[in-house]
Length: 547
Image (cartoon, rainbow, N blue to C red):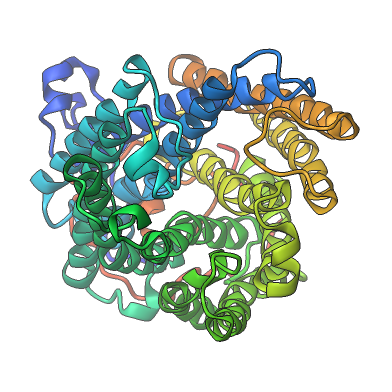
């Protein structure tokens, strides 16, 4: 992709969005999409740490069959807090709110998002929702699980259910604001010459994700609102004792929550497309197929919610339809994986830190996707439902794959965001530790689940202890792997080598501006004259000296 204007160099220090001399007030009132992306990055990292602490308590408690660390109630509260924070305050907003916010305007040649003030408001709404949710910790916690299943959540739980629901309800508006901003920006603010099929696949992924957010998030909001209404006013909606239907809650909840998996995974796939093409030095194979498969996932994702309900009492015929549709939704995901593999074939692969994360993503996502087909088959699902098999499956998809892509993208764009390079050896070490730790944590859980170990139990038969010990050991290794980037990326801000404008030799508009970008991204509006990922035919195994 080429542009008509030369690369932009940094102007005066006051023009640099990273100039800390502006003070805290300027950051809290900023409408610069890059600064808002950084605010999200800091906030989301904090929530990730809190969710990780809750997960650590769960894993430590499971070291012994009798659950010696936590009481029954505290164990329920710990895994609920872990699930709520990780799903609603890390996994869903992680990539769109940080890298999407930062790079979509630059990737399409715009100065900012379409609605800068709405963008800032989205961060404040996210923080308000997060503070509401975290306040339940000091008010006794919540023990319903992150799914808030009724009638327990709406009637019987003696914990701060409503406060947690209010926090999630509020944070949903943050996602909606961001999705509106992305859709309008992508439609109306693309640079001259940047047609739909010249867009980076990262942008396509966020376009599809924004559609899911706008269509699905209001359903979750209404569902949680109805839980609060039943809990406060005893109006029979979900509780059978009041004339309600608990299966209705499951339909409403999973109508959002299965597409929510793709809110997490689609942006991840967009990052992987960028990494694969950059570090194999080839135009991505089947560009249009990958772009359109994102839209196909967004559509089909709304048609398969019932595969979470095979044992709920829904119609056998409905279960059959949902099972068939589940296999269909695997097709566009498989298209991406096969096309990434074809891109790597005969490519000149450069094994830098971002590429290691990309390779890890492909491995973990493939395992998660294939085990999802087991759960999509009703006969197998009846056997392993509510066991650790399900826990392992969704962690491979939602946690392993998403976080590998998140960290891969963060390492890829870190020089562009900060103007500093990080220590490559530490980056490679962290990627390897996370991959090893993750598999040691969750592969044993597939075995436990198949053997019948139910999830959400902290007292279990002794024959499962060896698997839990392995999982806890793996989670410890994984925690070290997660901690390392926090250390060396922070250090790079102070001692890191100054980054070149394009340290990876990558294609894309974001690499034609300075590192870090100036306030308005470009001195002049760029004009796009080539296809996306237009790498030269003559490839080299080396990257520029800046890397």
